[in-house]
Image (cartoon, rainbow, N blue to C red; front, side, top):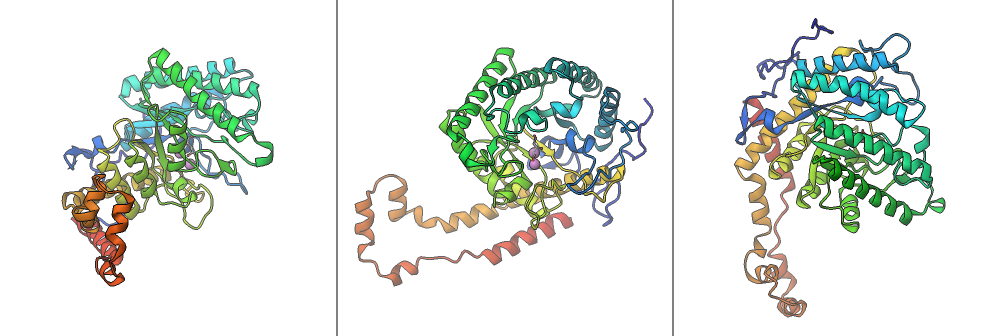
Length: 448
Ligand code: XLS
Ligand code: NI
Ligand code: NI
């Protein structure tokens, strides 16, 4: 097939030139880091809804993006939907990205009924399936949009309207059929409008009971059709509803445990969502990892001065390093990956900007992976923790950890100690020194 667009195939060029050009400076698919090839660790994924569908609109203006697959005047026709598939696969080929992710509604226009909509969708899925067979590209995850259409104004699984609830279930059923058919490694539920705007008109308990039951029905259906991909919930604290039920990792973990869903789901954590929740990305990844529930990453970032989700392509090496540290501690993401739920800025409207954006994102996480691997090899963070918690390795601390003391034993132990004695055991947190060390690792590893 002749080329659809002219951007050259992106290959690894190394970091000798400081100017970001058309190549990867750090992402070297075959390079071995921490015992595995980068391409095996870093399962990057193109997000259909941004890379293919996002027109770079904002609340004040129309789209600025120039996209070669737009079919003049009517970007929502079936012809455009089918044409986009060819562009996606050429984009994957040229960037070397192995995976993609999509919502049902990214792929094809809706019809007048769910049956008509499914028929449109299936035509595009037929083509995708064929292309996947030809190229070996894979689906990281798919999902259903239960938030774009008007019917979902009060949610999909948490709507007060049973007609809408049934429709949402129908949509999920079809998406699970697609997941099974295309072999999606995971299946994502992002609770777009699963939350509330106004407490007084909302039965929160009933809504949470509904969504938990909805998830159980989805799991039962997946089991019935033999779909074994990992189910994921993607926490987000606000936008679009004022109060999202899956606010952050810990809120979502509590929800899963409350309803006995912790063995069914893991978390898909997105950088920009973590800031909106008042956390850092590494915080969220840490808490999911420690709960054994780290599933996948939506690798983006936001502007820390902006209060909404801007889905910027990741370019913060410091953050990527700390996220990759958690990632390596987790042994990577067996059924997940790094999905670029990211879009170029509105002024980066040219098609080539999509390539530069993916290059920036992939290089950032490749660089973060290398620095994190070196930190672990040198046991930098492990040694910091070892020293800081050493008093729990012997004496009263060790006795407590072994479950050998009562509250009264601890009180007896502490009773006659003076402040001077206690304060003499405190250690500095050495935050500034640790940050310098981190910077030194970044400079040194990436300078090589
Ligand atoms: C929106 C979410 C969304 C999910 C998929 O903020 O990040 O894009 O990843 O529905
Ligand atoms: Ni996302
Ligand atoms: Ni998001």
